[in-house]
Structures are given as C-alpha cells and as structure tokens.
Image 1 (tube, rainbow, N blue to C red):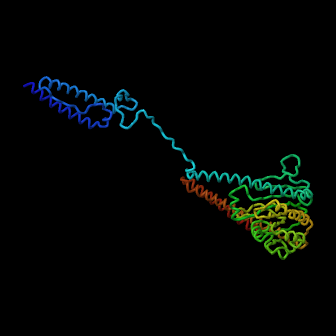
Image 2 (cartoon, rainbow, N blue to C red):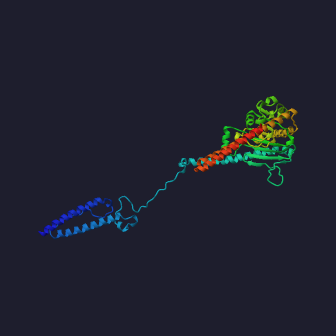
Amino acid sequence: MKLLTLIYMGLLIFTFVDGIQKGADVEDNEFAEFEDLDDEEEATVEDEGDAAFEEFNEEETNEQAANEEDSDFTTGDNLEDDEFDEDEFENIEPLKGVNKDADLKIKDVPLHFRTNWDSYYLEFIMVAGVLSYVLNYLTGKNKNNKLATAWFRVHKEVLDSNFSIVGDDGSGDTVQNGVLMKDSESRYLIWCSGRIYCEGMLVELNFLKRQDLVSVMAKMMRPTSDEVKITVTMSKENMDTFVLFIGNKKTASKMGKEMNDLYNFCPERRSGDKFGLSSSLSILAEMGDLAQGIIDSKIQNCLNAYPEMFDYMHFSDQYCGSRPSTEEDQPTKMPETTKVLIFNFKIPGKGKSTIKDVEAMLPMMKMVIYCIDKVKRYRLSREGKIKADKSRAKFVESFEKLSHAQRQEASQLRKEEKIRAKNERLMNEDDPDKIRKLEEKQRKQEAKRRSSSKQKQVKIR
C-alpha cells in the first residue's frame, strides 16, 4: 500500500515538473537556439516496484538541474557585455545558414563629389565674388595708374616750361621734381609752383573708382567721366576784384546755389551764346561787361572746339568754399577768402577713357596757362571797381548783422537756460526759508535788469 502511494505521488510530481519545464521552455524561447537541452523526455514505467522509485529520484535530479540552468540564464541576462563568460557559450549551436568562419566584410561605398556640387553653391558664389573683386581691384588700379602716368607724361613739357617746380610732394628737405603723388587708387595730385602772377597750381586727377567693384556696377547704371581739376592760387596784387563762372547749365545751376561767392555776388545767369559760346553753357558774372572782357577769341575757340572736355571755370577773388546749408551752420566770423582760378575738365570716353583720350587734353592745359596771364592783365573800369567795392561792403555788413543776430539769439538761449535751472532748483527746494531767499534774489536781479535796459534806451535817445 505504501509502495503504491509512493508511485502515485511520483507520477504526480513528474507531471507537475514536466509542465513547469515546458512552460519555462516557452518563456525562454529567445535562448532556444543556444540551449543544448532535450525538451522531450520519454518516461516509461517498466516496473511498478523498485524501477518506479528509481525513476522518481531521477526526475527530482532533472528538476534540480533544470532549475539551476534557468537560474544561470536568468543571471546571465543581467550581466553587462564586458562580464559575459565565453565558456558558457562553447556548446551553443550556430545559426542555420551562417558560416562562422566567414569574415565580416564592409563594402567601400565611393563618394561621388561631382554628384553633390549643388550642396556647395553658396560657397562657390562667395569664392567667385571674392575672385571677381580681387581681379577688378587689380585691373582698375592698374588702369587708373596708366591714365595718370600718361597724363603727366604728355603735360610735363608744358608744365616745366611755365613752372620751376613740377611734382614736389614736400616729403623731403630738398625740392623734388617729377613726382606724381598718389592720394588714393583713383586720385592723383601734382603740385606746381615757381611762376609769376600766381602762388602755385594744384592738379587733381580724379578718376573713376575702377578698383571698387560696387562703384563700377553703379556707374554702369549712370555713366560718368574721369575729371581733371586744376586750382590756381593767384597773387593778391595780380587779380582784380571780380567773380566769374562759365560752365554747363546743370553745373552752373548747382554751383550757383552751393558756392558762397556765386550765391552772393552773381545772382543773374546769362546764356553762353550771347558771348560767342555754345548755348549749352551758362555764365554767372558779377558785372555785365566782365564776361566780354575775359572771354576773348582764343578762349572762345578752345571752348567751342572741345565742348566734350569742358565742364566749368570759376574765377573769384572772394572764394571761401561752399555756403552753409542752414543758418545754424553760419560762421560767426568772416571767412577767409582767396583769389583763385578753378578749372574742371572731363576726360573723353564717359568712363571708358583710353591713353589717347588723355593725351588729347593738352589744349585744355594751354588754355589754363593763357587764362593766368589774361586775368593778370585784366582790370575793371572805374565804375566797375566802385560797384565791386560796394557789393563787397554790403556783403560784409549783411554778414555782420547776421552774426550779431546769431550771437544775440545764442545769448538769449543761455539766459533762458539759466532761468530754467534756477526755477528747477527752486521747485526742488523743501526749506521755506531758502525758497523765500531765492525768490527775493530773482526779483532783485529782474529789477536790476529792467533798470539797466531803461538807462540804455535813454542814452540811445
């Protein structure tokens, strides 16, 4: 009876353990390929006696082994990669269809750069812009240098024959000749001195900013020309008192409003055809007979023969630059004036000047030399001299009145500012005694100011 009970209990335990093992195998199916276990166990009961008891013990042993294996795999899941024991996987079968002896090879994928050029379009644009700017700078700089050198080479003979010093930059202790001063990449200077009737002459070669790509693109929309500006400073005793301007209509209108001497002494504008010149020119003269006395046949022929080169000429004994744009900028002192002859010429080509165009400007320089001698010889009539002196005295008087009014206005503003400051200090004061003292002080000052103004009025009467 006891034997049968043991056999029956052994069968129940076997069935229970087998179910647990199969459930564990289903849950741990991730390790099914790596486990070298026999999932199917055949259980046969050959003998109901001793054989059943031995089989029962054997099942208990298998159950313990299965539990140990499950615990090993469970702890292995929690291990990190660097703590795996390689001996645990020695008997694991490889995956089907995988050759464990085969080496892992990574195929080199070539980088086709040309197929990705569209990703670098911004860099290409920047590089192209920098190269364009550098090339334009070099070519524009060289062209301006060639034009300046060509102008100086062609005109040097005329300058040497009229001035003892041509091209002195003033940098050394000794006088130098033949120096073409470079003020910028588009502006060159030549200083000449040592001639009768004048103190000196400054030649400014103002070329287009060909070295600046932005300026070049702007000039494409609005073409302009290279210019040559010549300023002759006359000796005080070798030029009479008059103001004369001859130039293109557009330039004459602009200069008549901007220049101080033209605005004050040349209010009327006349057409050039009345004096034997082109109708495209305008003349601003202080007196009517002044233009007829200066513009003779030689000047007429030169201006009519080269109209594309001429811009304007400005003769003045009251030259002091541009007039102030507003009354606030009006100087309080009378500006210093100089006697000058200013010529402005345009190099032909309208921005596309060549060396031949520069060489063709030699007659303009000869006209400048002629005008120096012409102005020295010219003298106003007695009536013209009186009229010129009156206009200058009137200008000085009006300037002094304007300056006096500006000084009075500035003084009044200062007084108002002081009164405002005193009132603010009075309002910010908390002590009633101090407030009373300040009010009494202001009343005394006001009474004193009124009494002094009455005394002045009595003296004037």
